[in-house]
Amino acid sequence: MHGGYFLVGGFFAISAFHLWQFTRRSDGAVIVTPDVLMGLRSRTAKMYGESASRFIVYAVGKESAQKAAEKIFGADLSPERIWKKLPHWFRLMGYGELKVIERDSGKEVRLTVRDTFEGRTSGTTGCELTRGYLAGLGTALHPDLDCECVETSCGREADTACQFQLHWFPRVAEPQAIEVASAEV
Ligand SMILES: [Zn+2]
Image (cartoon, rainbow, N blue to C red; front, side, top):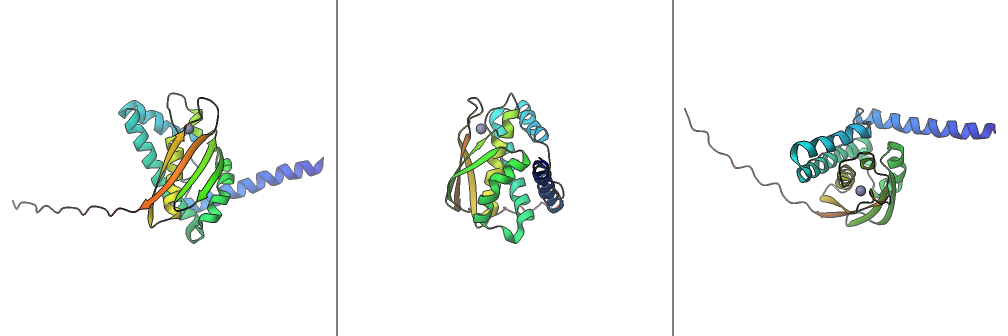
């Protein structure tokens, strides 16, 4: 019986340690409650419409996950290690039950996530922030390539797992800014 208490206690101690590591390495940027994150989704949908909201939230999720992953993992950013640990981290952070189905990191990765945190927010469709997070992580793992993520099937309505596909592409050069000479006054 006491062994059970030790196991449960150990689990919470390890979880707390991991959370502490995340906050320490990321200045607390990762520890944001799902409610706050999803407020962004519902608020932008009301203000700018559904498709603009999807675009904004995906882009924000992608950028923040890329920065966080680079900062947290640094030189340890080995795709093999990250894909292996990702289900545990997703569960720990409350992002859902993630399962990697097919893994060819740098080309194509297919995975499912059950109980995404978008599922706790009514009035929105799709899982744009989860999609953005995955794309940002994919970009951080292969910095010479760009990564995009599509949600091929959202399971929120049917209470099944959402399906995502990550694809990597050669990075397109940023267009050069055209300098316009300012007229002298
Ligand atoms: Zn979904």
